[in-house]
Image (cartoon, rainbow, N blue to C red):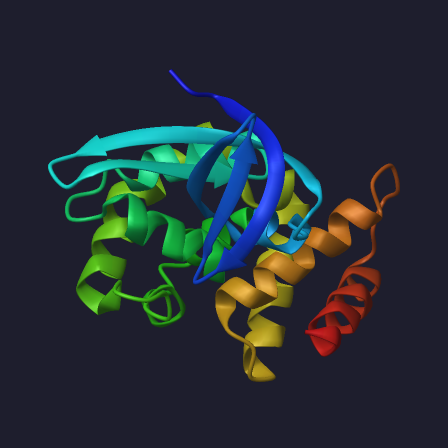
Length: 198
């Protein structure tokens, strides 16, 4: 079983990397995180998963264990293969994708190439019940803070942001205030600052 690989990036195009690993040229279909890190002519280490299908083997690369775990769950969904699961991880970060599934944001999920509304609905239906076990509760909290985050997400959605994008920005804002007792206005201010940079 291939779990990781290290090599020199030869090229990056169309969502895939060519990596020289001790003289072997490997094609790796990569997540957005990996593609953002990859520089031609520079070394790169990434987590990997090999999938064998009737059309042959395909190698997929991830920037962290959460990405690989979410990929593994996605490919268990009916009619979602490795290429489509990776297409989702090129459009969304893990937190954005988890937030979109939790919010059943079919429109946002359908932005990924090849997914469409029906597959997006299937993803939400099959994965939403598993997310708390796999990735924790919304924004890593329960009770009043989680309820507060939801009300702030409502406010951001009213400003024209998608539900998944709003919740992702709020989650990032909460993490930046780790160890503090965040007030709702602080979360909203930081989330808006992040959204305006995108």
